[in-house]
Length: 117
Image 1 (cartoon, one colour):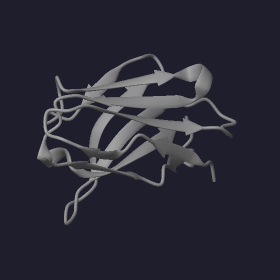
Image 2 (cartoon, rainbow, N blue to C red):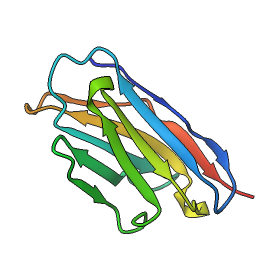
Image 3 (tube, rainbow, N blue to C red):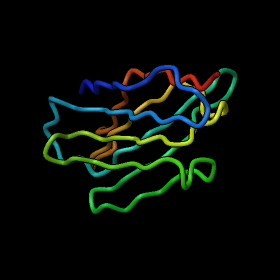
Image 4 (cartoon, rainbow, N blue to C red):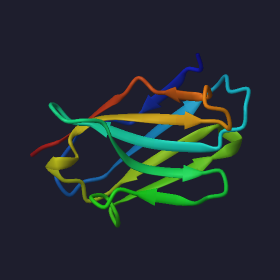
């Protein structure tokens, strides 16, 4: 098991900003895929944003233009910059790292993001 350490969650007002980070300190393989997912109460986990090793990104329609995913390969870290947040962004956010092989699929413990005035 590879530990992924998330940070940056918390309480933010609507229209505000928040930056999430997720780092893997004991990776022994090339990380092809880094992603952020979220799960709101009573809902299924959904993809928020992903970034591939070559820099290709993909976003959920609900966050396009507001969230930006980026990665620092030297630090094995992925970031999620969240701007103009909305109450519907409230959820537990999970990071996900994947290598080339199927078994190389690891999740963070989750960090709570609450958007409320």
